[in-house]
Length: 301
Image (cartoon, rainbow, N blue to C red; front, top):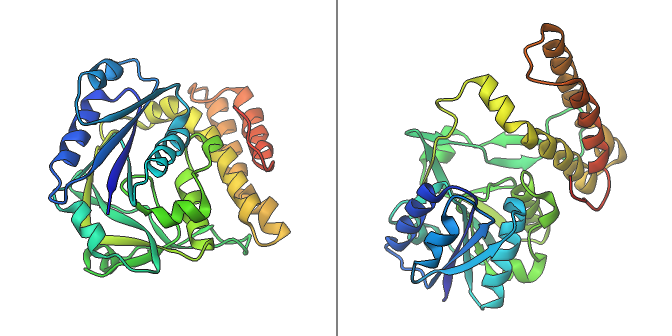
């Protein structure tokens, strides 16, 4: 049984060092660590060139989805049985990998750890995706306190690329992540494809991974200004996911419309009070991103 970790990084050298250290200190030893460097300019490439025991891929910045596409492909081509994926800002605790593996079952395809951020459980997984009722949120049944504090695995349909352990059989059957998504929804897309293929995606509350807290010291204004580009990907990719997997025509086209109307009103309000969070062109772009997601193929933004 050969196990590798795939870490995707971009300009977070100080955190990447902590990730690599945590991976090397696992009680269940890894056979390999693959690092996909998405064109970092902060000295990451130079630091990686000085390390031993790492398989390094340097490429242009193609986002998290492009990074995991390349890393999982490399791991699969090298013949690994298990592929443990994570961003460069999460640190698995010593027994995390061992706990994930201990839950192995023929029906399970992806095993996701519990994330802790700032001393609290970071819970963004959902047990069910609504893809038919256009008047309900798509994400249904968030994990309960009993789910996240218990010892039993919980079946989920929405995950994050922050520690999922993926069986080789899953990659054989469903292929690689959708690299055109760049960021956001690439993990949900992969988890749902896994579910459609007949595998279960499970949340393992006894496997713990610590998550860096980046936003605790930022104001709402700073978050909006630094993350506006993420909003465009969220809109485009959310539209794509609903259109691609929706189970009826109404859901495919209209489930997210109320949210986009909310965004439009919020932008108009901010323009009226002139707080410089948004520009007039942002309203036009919001709806262009929605339309872009309705295509079956996503081009560069």
